[in-house]
Length: 474
Image (tube, rainbow, N blue to C red; front, top):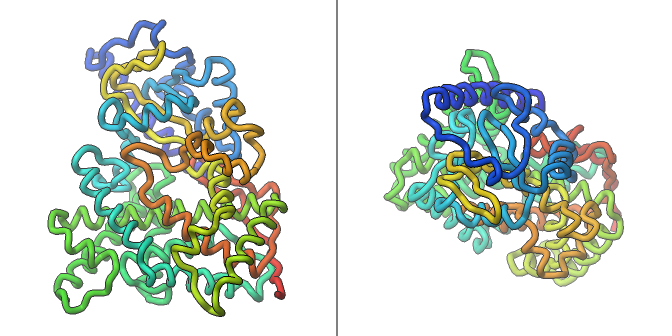
């Protein structure tokens, strides 16, 4: 998958670089700022590509990688480069990262490569800006808030986690990342559309979604048979399926409400069908990639941190003793999981679910002694701040107890920040905590050190995170 992603980068960068070159040739792009106002750095030796391939070279996600280490050592934590086909400011500085995120729409704006637009769709919340982003995001936030306060959904999360853990009782080994992705995807299908895992349409949507995700990290050439072409078709099929569900619900009318997010979405008359479909697709993507990645990171780090695992297990055993036999977990139980919350937060800091985001300066921006030219790309690197020894004591050490210091939360940005902070962060943590409750009380496990999280730059595991599992007999 890493090689496929680099192919995307190469073709995207080549296209973008040619556009930038032609624009400069004919004077469409203004001259750069005086060199003494720009951060130091290197624009690379390769035309168009610049330093993109070195920047995106896969590395362990609990490290910054060779490229950032060398450049920060040579140029400082804010430096210039040539990435993704254009001049770029790279920030490994926490203060500047926060400044970028807090000034969304005023000084900076989301700016992703064209193939990302083509495959996610022009209405994806990750890509749109301004009033349209506010409108789509408000619908997603309402879904998250309703989910957190819905006893029926929380009970379903608990039941599905129990079902997954029970299915492993006769197994010695599981490929955890795959299992986690299916779990979180089915949770979203149920909450969004009232689709159960055994429903045939669930398998169809999951199959199309797998094809869609493979194309997301492939060479963006729209030729029949390529992964990219298949992904574009898969997205159209998913969109068609969702549109059909919307029409069916509208025909059923008010008398057959299911109480899911689609019912709520249909009540938002200011959204057209394309916008509703895009919101649903964004939420499915978040459930499939983000929450499953969080679960995998927690399980990986706990496998190599016995004292943390024991403390988490003690907390979950104490919580279970307060519950009646078969009584499901609820929102109040989640809020009591203080150490579990620390484990989740530390896994996000160490594992770095999101390495960086794409932004572009809307105009010339002054930050300390630097001026960032308008039109330049700006990449805030979350990983670098999370692993900065000047910010975190022993940053490479997995230490959930560091989160007893309330200031720690101000030093990490695992879900971004500002107007685009991930709206589903709390729900993802809840689903992870519910799963951990049942997993640690029923199994112990081992994971190989080399089957570690990798930044490609998306999160992946070398071997899919294969766990050797052993059932506990309480």
